[in-house]
Each structure stands twice: as C-alpha cells, then as structure tokens.
Amino acid sequence: MRAGYLSQFFEGVAAKRLSGVEANPAQSNQHEFNGVQGLKSLFGSEIKREVSATFLYLSDNDDPLTADGNLTWYDARERNPQRSEYRLYFQQNQVMARAAEGDLLLVAKQTDGRALVLVAQGGSTIANQVLWLFGVDPNTHPGFSVREDLETDRDRIGFFTSFILDQIGVNAAVVDDSYLEDMLSTFGGRFPPTKLFSEFARNKVHGADPAADPDGTLVAWMDREETLFRTLEKHLVLDRLKVGFADDVDGFLSYSLTVQNRRKSRAGLALEHHVQAIFDAAHLKYDRTPLTEGRSRPDFLFPGATAYTNFAFDSSLLTMLGVKSTCKERWRQVLAEADRVERKHLLTLEAAVSENQTEEMVREKLQLVVPRGLHSTFTAAQRGWILDVAGFIRLAQERQRRAELPL
Image (cartoon, rainbow, N blue to C red; front, side):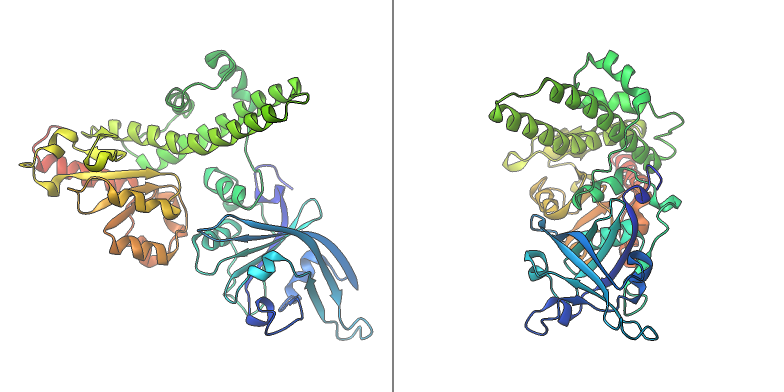
C-alpha cells in the first residue's frame, strides 16, 4: 500500500466484458461470472470464501446505481483436488439487473477487505475511463484481465484520476498540509473567491512556462489547485464539524449542500481562470463571457465582442471556445453559443471520451481541445482530430494575424 497511488485503495482489479448468460436472467439463472480462473491471485485458493461487496452501475447519462451484497468465491470441484474449478457467485440485485451483454465488468479487491463490483455501460465514456484508470484491457483474452501492481508511475493519483475515483465512490483527495498555514494566513481562515484562489495556486507552481508549454502548465496548475483546495477544505470542514450542529438537522443538511456545491462549481471556474492566464501569456485578443445572440455567453470569444458584432469582420477569423472540466451531455450547450462561428471548440479535462460521442461532435462541427497529457486515453482515430492547448493557441494566433491585429 502506497499513499497517493491506486494501491492505497485497491489490492488488485480484474476486468472483462459481460456475456449474455452473465447479464441476462432470461438466458441463465446461474448468477455467476465466467472465466474467473485468473481471480485466484485476488481471492486465493480457499474452498469457499464470502466477500462483502458494493455493486455499482455507471453510465454517461444516468445517476450511479448502487447496491450492497456479497460475493461467494468457491471451488465447485472441491472433492477433486486434481481438477479445481473456481466460480464467483453474486447475489442478484438492482445493479446486476441493469447490466447488459457487452457492458464492462470490473471486480476490484479493496484494501479494506471488501470488493467493488463495477458495471459500466458498454461503449460509454465512463467505461473507457475506468479501463484507463486501472490500466486493464478486457480484450486480451476471454476471461478476466487481472492487474495487481498498482504502484507504478501510471497509478499515481492526480487531478484526472481523482475525478474518476470520485465517480466510483472513492474519495482519493490528495492533501498537503505544508501549504495550510500560508493559506489560512492569506485568506483569513475562509475560502476566498475562486479567481484569487486560482492565482494563489499558480504562484505555488514553480518552473511552469505557460508560453512555452501551455498543456503541461495547465495540468500542473489544476493539479496544484486541487491539492490546495482539498487541503483547505479538509481543515475548514473539520473545524465546523467539531463545533457540531446539535439538533439542527436542517443546518447540517444546508452546510453539507454548500460543501458539495462548492466542489462542483470550483473545478469549472478554476479551469476557466487558468485557461485565461494561458491565453494572456500567449498575447491573444479575446473577451470572456461576452453577450451574444439569445443572451448566450460563450466562455471565450476571439478576437472579441467588437469584432463579433461587426458584420464586416470576416466570420472565418472568429473563434469561440467553451470550457468545461467535463463534457458528458453538457457539450451540447456550446452549440447554441455564438451563431456566427460555424466550427466551435470545447476545451475539457475529460479523459477517454467515447468514440460515439466524439463522432457526434464531429457531425455537429464541434472540435475538442484536450491537454496533451490526456491524448493517450483516446483512440488513434480520435487523436488525429483532437487539438491540444498549444494547437488551439496557434490556431487563434494565426487568425489574429490574418485579421491584422497586433499580438
């Protein structure tokens, strides 16, 4: 077990695609996963073992579905030691009732002794992300693909991985108390406005060069802000919990909602602030959240609102960029912004977006902008279409030059 790595939470994982007899009760009532021989390294060679488990179903469009239950790991041929045949039995529940043939199944042995049985809709972005997170490939052979060494460089928990872990119910927030006193002194023991917090985070990243390496710098800034935010949040929330809520249930619920809403809104705003600092370093001309048709407000409009509202200005030299830490179905919102811009751009930190989704984006004339470090999570065909941050900046700079606007 190593703090800051996947091994802090998981001893090993195994993945496969669900077959029809595993997922469809109409085909079989066995309630067993097939191809489990490789799981002996996770669950051992005991004749029979009961494991408490959390079942989780994930898709791109619906809220997560959870259920508690048990797994039974047993040797169906215990009386024939020369020919053991291990099986993994699961209790039917609402998660497995939702599962379908072709869905991703991931069985993870957690460090607390429990198991996580995760089913992700086949072909979905979240299924791609789970596979990327754990570095497993269910297509390598018919049974489970197993991985136990979760302490390599690729298993280090950062901004991208912690986001995916949050979705599967694992709080993997990284904190660094060495910054706590500085934050408490600077911000007076409270959360500052997001713009000030983002500026503080950027100042705590040394050696970053937004002009020479906008992709690496953006990721470094987001990583540092996430760590600082979680560090300050942990301190302030613990202080509030120590005071307690007595019998004020409504007060507790209200405070909990405030914490959750702050987490949700902060990441998106932080990304916008850091992207703006990247564009300033590139000397780009833009307006942030200008008013356009239908009272829509695109996140960034290049070279700005004045050019946009001047119909004598060549529309092919206009550029619009939406910024969303995750896209999911929210990417469609960008399509309704800045009508004069035919091909729109969306910058996101979401890894491993499904091919189905990116193909739809291509049809809708929307191009993704993703930090270079995440391009490896996409397929080769997708990588030929996605821009990195540096590539988008070059595009905006070229249009700015063609419009004869000074850099």
